[in-house]
Image (cartoon, rainbow, N blue to C red; front, top):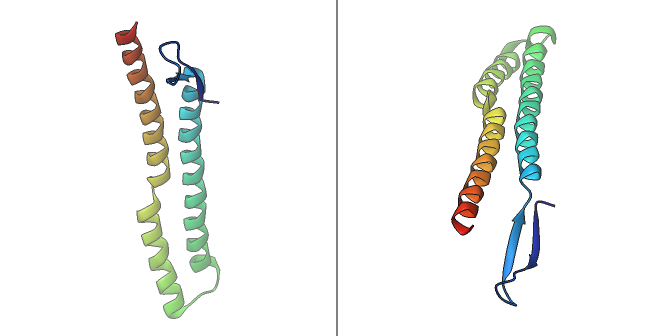
Length: 107
């Protein structure tokens, strides 16, 4: 569990959040890895579309439109998932840094 809610010694109805830095750091890596895996899956999808056109015996408008769709899908999807995974990792690392700065100010 990333955060534990415990009674705060400063007041009966106060809550304090205890952050597990190791868990957050591990999850940052998990998000980055997931982005890379999704990227591979999407590239496999685009490769399958292209293979259908090239090796599937398709002709005419169907082949043309499928080829156009594969090209657009590749342009739109390329790098998107890995970028999101990397950004999530950065956000989690920045969060840990902000917590560390806040801890220094308190103690």
